Length: 186
Ligand code: 5GP
Image 1 (tube, rainbow, N blue to C red):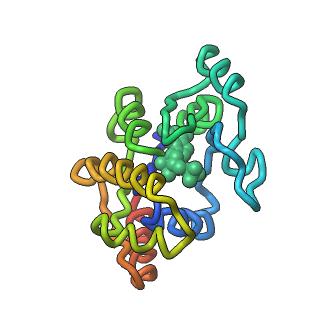
Image 2 (tube, helix red, strand yellow):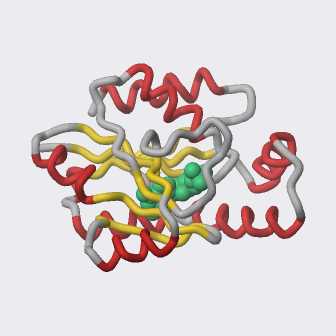
């Protein structure tokens, strides 16, 4: 029986660094690519973590039934592809996905609960997260307000997650050890 490991957590939670860590220590897991309509960031490669699609193409693929789930996140659309997930899951592989709360809730309706492991990366209060986000790059008040709203949405999942990994400032190594313990016991 295959497994879907889903990582959640708001921007600034350090989720990306922990996912990178898992990629390094578990090359045997699969890392399915998602589709998104957001702009590519510097250093990103199309088809590596995401397929970058125009909105019309994304909508065409929704209509074609290509997505297992899709969601609006901020101004953009994100979706995971059936073609990247269903067959490997049937073959018994372990797959790691990064989804927002809407995405996980949709998957939970489609995939048996024994096959979904959710890991919520908890970086503490909004005040702490705001400090981190501001330290990373300049940010406008309206963008910050959007992040706060997303933080509030994401945090609603914390009590439902299979595991909560605390990623406090300056404690990244501990968070990595906690992640290792979880993924090595799957
Ligand atoms: P970013 O734009 O920073 O790469 O991703 C923003 C957020 O989009 C991620 O933190 C994750 O919560 C969400 N996301 C990424 N891929 C998917 C996907 O395939 N489906 C859903 N529902 N959310 C996704």
